[in-house]
Image 1 (cartoon, helix red, strand yellow):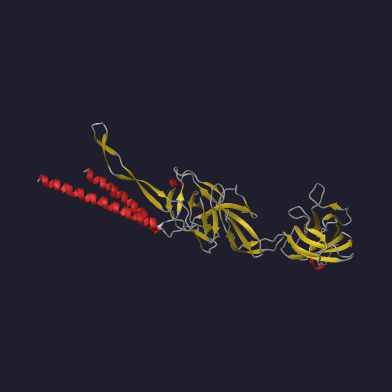
Image 2: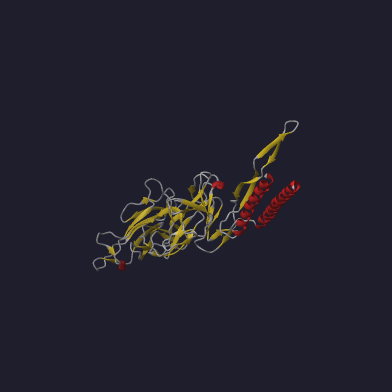
Length: 435
């Protein structure tokens, strides 16, 4: 009897809606969970006749579930203080390897580290990203599992460049000396103090002498101290460094034009037998005379001689301490020597049709023919969202809306159930009429 099948389709559809609402409410505290809503559509119609004007008289066959749409709007972001937690603010998904050569996608950034230091999702999938070599991320390389070098030691780096921002007192008299020091590092990571001694030799003219302590050198157990590296600097009437010379060489113009010089070579290893006392290679350092703007970093004005800042690119070895994830997804490790180095960058993915994704549980999604293939990229590019370290995206379930939908679904279920009991009574009355 059609009267029974019609409300049964309603009961089935309403059951789906109730299940969807129950699932939303049960996951209201699930990290990165996206709520769903059930939408209905009427079934086919049977034509049972026509009106006098020829209009069809049709009777419907019930209802069906048309869609179960996922709401991909942003959930609130809550700080957790956990270094391995990452919240995604905006579009996109984190990429995880399923271990079978394929990828799954998730909004849940509650990552942890396994025993190998690999960053994994809550269900153990490897978090994927772009690799880094010597701190430089290659976003054109294939995706790889992000690994944190816990317990690793960063190799030392010998100083190859230094700079000094200083002023030499224009009011000084001939013979006035001003020493300045910069700490540099050799190939074994040992520090050495380079002393630059400036001495005024004439108006607007200063000599310089650069040397390491005598105790820093050794050859077969006997100290061998090379001569200090010397030269001359001249300044114009405005106190700007104009020329430099090294040793007995000719003065050269300081600047960025063709033929100008922008640095001096400080070679602390002048002979093949000359090594540092700790057994490290000798040092060859470029002394940069120009700042980032292309102007000299050493000036001469009428104020006390002083060094405002020094910098150099060497460092000692360092032990792994911690890591952070930037808003661009870059995973940056900090070592005990104060150095920071990128070890990778989290990848994000997007699809053309979000509703076409297949839900796998554990907060994971898989692409389908309906969703289209995933396109990977980096945070903040191609419409992808940005990341927030030590935070998580909460569920976007709206309790008030869910309770309202629950009442509507309940009433609809009750109405369809009432239809079944009513049709049952009608059928019983019909049978009684026959008897």
